[in-house]
Amino acid sequence: MPPLDLPHPNLPYDRGRLTPGIVHIGVGNFHRAHMAVYLDELFALGEDQDWAILGAGVRPADAIMRDALKAQACLSTVIELDPDAKAVRRVGAMIDFVEVDPSNAPLIAAMIRPEIRIVSLTVTEGGYYIDPATGAFDPTAPEIVAEGRNPDRPATAFGAIVAALRARRSSGMKPFTVVSCDNLPGNGHAAKAATVGLARLSDPPLAEWIDAHVAFPNSMVDRIAPATGSRERRMAVEFGFADDPVPVTCEPFRQWVIEDHFPSGRPALEKVGVTFTDDVGLFETMKIRILNGGHAVIAYAAALSGIEYVHQAMADPIVSAFLDTIEIDEIIPVVAPPPGHDLARYKRQVMERFANPEIADTTRRLCFDGSNRQPKFILPSIRDNRARGRMPEGLILANALWCRYCYGIDERGEEIAPNDPDWARLNTVARAARENPDRWIEMRPIYGDLADDGAFRDAFGAALTLIWNVGTQAAMSRYCGR
Image (cartoon, rainbow, N blue to C red; front, side):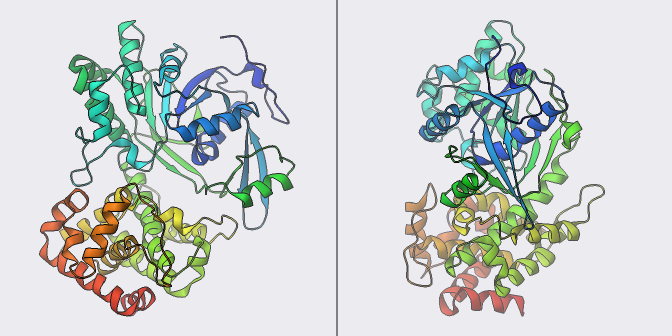
């Protein structure tokens, strides 16, 4: 591939010297504020400039992002929102964006290129086709069944990955490493389960080869990067980037912990603050339970109370006390700290991050896709408490607030717009659960074995009834003052 003639406005490296080593599927705000920033800093050190990113996507929305980024040579405007001062940077680690096509042929062709040694992805929790009840890959999902019948025209990210690995195996090429950057427990395991499970539907020998030869390191990623709207575009204008329709805003904090398993090589990201370890699990559990679980605790309580922004929720004394009490009494006691980490200090840092008014993260964003997020962020902590003989009343109340939210009308009487891929079913069940809370817990794809825990069912029913009888704020106050 000839060098690309790419502009490098005020960048401390020559973009024309960059060559691709990574294909990243799912070029949203998080990726551009996280992985791309780390690589940008590495390139600025003069290191590993053969690891630039080719952006890619499999959804129609990805084509819109591609058009916007291609119009500005794939540069991203990243604005860090420190409460004391904003800082802007132009990130040039992505040097091209693969054409988005329904057949995914351009994406597959990009992943077959021998210089591509890593395929990374941020496709959200739902993109891994995990059965919430079992935590395992679900081969019966309609999209997966369709992929198995038509492996030559994959519509999903994992279908395209399988097709590219098939082509590399046929031509005798080494496989690339697959790196998940999604907020999932064991995201590398989830990516491997989806890839191997999908391959097994159409090509069992290929599935065995992938299982034996392809690396799927686990990773823990962390940075709050809210959606882009008019506010964020106004900030870009203020910084002199009026021509960028897709600027990214984010908090100053960022963290990346990765299992060091890259048979085909990797960039030296440890030089810019990435932690490589043999065990990501402890870091991952800490983050998913305390931060992501914390988001889920406040999301529905705030939204039902008419609170639009996360920092406003943290300024509400009842919502913040609700979060703090649950974290201290019900989440931290069932989380093992990574070496050298104080969970109480980490919790305080998380709450400070939530309270940053510059982020303007919305409670609606946090409420999105509860059917995938609750089984990963809230229910595991409930299960761990129950295994220790405790009834986690706060977490159960937070879970019941999700049910109340899915009723579709907030406490001001205003309609809640659909906010879950499975909203129609959730709304129907939530309305039935107002009179019979068991109807909600009977959703076994979400609750699994918890549906058989009679004491949990009773506690959930009591929590939901309390919410309907006294309201969200009063229910939280009763919990905090118990």
